[in-house]
Image 1 (cartoon, rainbow, N blue to C red):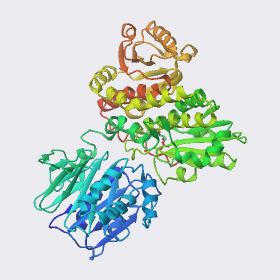
Image 2 (image 1 turned 90 degrees about the vertical axis):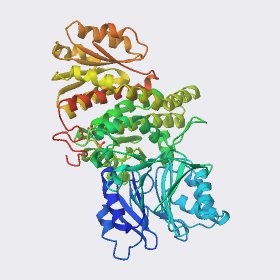
Image 3 (image 1 turned 120 degrees about the vertical axis):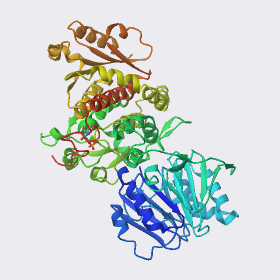
Image 4 (image 1 turned 180 degrees about the vertical axis):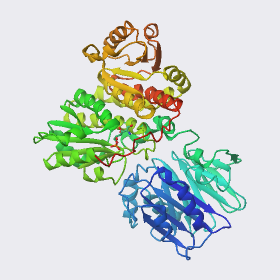
Length: 607
Ligand code: AGP
């Protein structure tokens, strides 16, 4: 996610702001900028050091703010990087989060004469404060009115010539932490940028805002009532703060699971009307109505999310789908007849095989729609339409939160496609939407069982071979679970369709070759039970993933991890979470760096 840093105190702000951004570089970003009261604003695309080279001696002042941007709206560019200002460049601010109603706010402000320069949602906030100042007696009142008008999420840091000795801060859904120093105060999007200066911090809660000066801080709620809160002392090292206190980014990103779903849904699902909106696809909606076939082509975990999407689309949108490994698709002679649409899924947006596959498809005239996490990436730019994940960069090499978001976006895409093609009845549509809304809490309940899953992982950590098997919506999860385990623990693990057991794999089974069986309470549950019985009859150990309330599997399998019930179409999102945690603890238990496994890169930009 983007990084925010602000300072007000007795020291020169410029070097502190640059150091603050450097402490946040690990979060991933594509541009950076800062503003210092009395000195002005500087921005740069690329690394923070590009911004640093722009700061001559003139950039002096004791109050300022800075930002590293991970684009969610508008491509990476200087004009789109933060901070953003009002028309008169008297108010400057940086923002993390998504302003969902920025279009309507922007239109209203333009009608009142405001001039916008960027393509971002953030800029609206500066102009709205400017508009509200005209009618309100104080900056604080103008800010309060602005915060109440915003829908969506924000972590805001604001500075202005109207109040040059103050920094204003606000939080709703995007982390903001204050650093309380001696005669100086700090604000950041995570404590890793503050810890080098002070360990006394105050975390803002959603719906709170604050005013910082060199020697004071005040907290308020959205009613303008002052809140009293003492600073707490954090003992984390800088590195620990970057991982949110977890030992690895991978676990931090697994635990984000429920918020990943929420961020993926943000601005796309109306919880009142239960309508799915994908404005990013409206430009190709007419073509989507007429497509005859979809080819999903990607690599690794991204492809496995596509395998789940295949089942969703065929079941509810009734469009034929085929799955293609991009590394194969690009070399064989694919037939792409008119009416074919290509879907690519990619976290990095730079995977060479996936890029080559969509280029070949485009050469043959196919429509290309992609699910991408990195705004401005090559695959994003070369697709005809893109659904961005909106989940911030994934840092662990083993993909976890990206997979959760990719499958979630496939569910939304399926509903969108089925609606415009008239293949989904209203009752089913609403049922699926309601179940999507319920997912974050269900994922959170699985995450609360980490210790239980760790104990099971420890029990199985001695094995050198694993089989993962599933059917239908958990068929792709067998492959994803096996990939997670093999890539971070270097253990041999194979994903298989359970129906294939008799065609070979069962020959491998003995007491030293355990099986992870995805046996959720769905249409193929009884078939899975038969497969488990076949394995037990050959002395194979079985770790089953089952649905809460199942009372029979514990008598058959050696171990069972339960996940909450959901509709069959969404069960992959629940079944995968225990497997991510299982793989993590086995990899860590073997002493490996699960964030950076041997021989692997986060983005395979070469063939
Ligand atoms: C998954 O854990 C791996 N890191 C790998 O399979 C990855 O999913 C694949 O390389 C695709 O990467 P992309 O999503 O950036 O295109």
